[in-house]
Length: 68
Image (cartoon, rainbow, N blue to C red; front, side):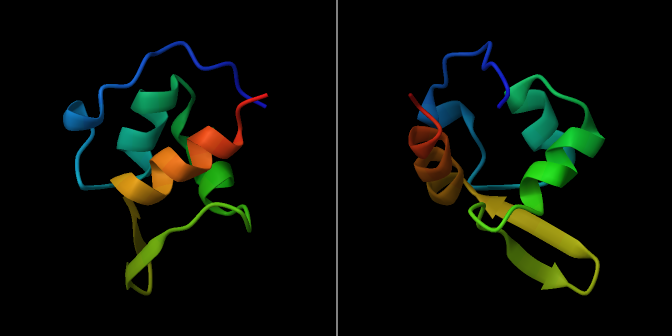
């Protein structure tokens, strides 16, 4: 599990964002962000066959479930 280095202000997180933005939010590489997006417990929205986006609400719920 990644160690989160940021405190998130919900208003600063876009409503929809991609793997690059997820990587920036979590402080991980883009490839690690894509591995997180591939997890069954991580919700993504499929925009087209190769484009996925993350909803802010889904991300925050997932992040809360990762808490100890």
